Length: 250
Image (cartoon, helix red, strand yellow):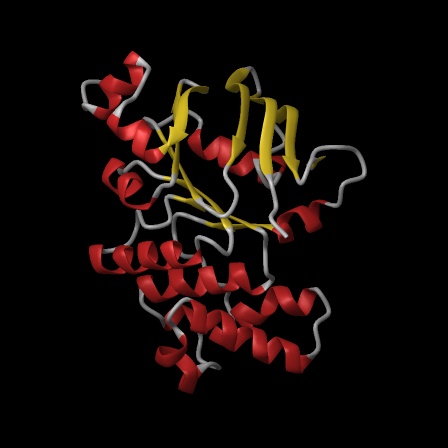
């Protein structure tokens, strides 16, 4: 089954600051959407609105709809835990849990009540998927904090996909990595495309060109332009987009 993701008249406030303004968009299924724009334009706010992570900040107010398969995830009675299971997140900096490599990946599956056999299978499958299994198979009980930065980020990606989300959000997930490790994460995201709907935030226009099937350009909390990557980068329609891509602003 293909799972749709859309927003309708999405607005977000941090106290009195209107951070997102009337964002309505349908995101392509099982492709990579890259969100670009200058710092403070609302990229990460938009991303975190897609799985209700914004609610961790009591000063935030959200209006409008985020629709997954047509259901508004902000509707009364919606299970937030279920939302965050269906919509995974890979953060900017690797954040391994203070436990073993194995338990990091197993954590979410155990919470969902999977038996030990299925958990073990899921751990291996997820580590294989991110290219980490061959590097850690003989030390699964070692602390995850002993891994390199690139390995830790791949571990976090394995943890995210272990619970089999439908959608994966990536908030500048290569920004804190060295170029080789960053290239590894990019390659993994390209491999995951087709299996998941991916939405990534990036400051790196070159990275967006390499990865994106679809692009959103944001400015001061507004969605200025969006469309297929080929068209967006080669024939942008809005003057603001043209100037940003030419590095004349932002």
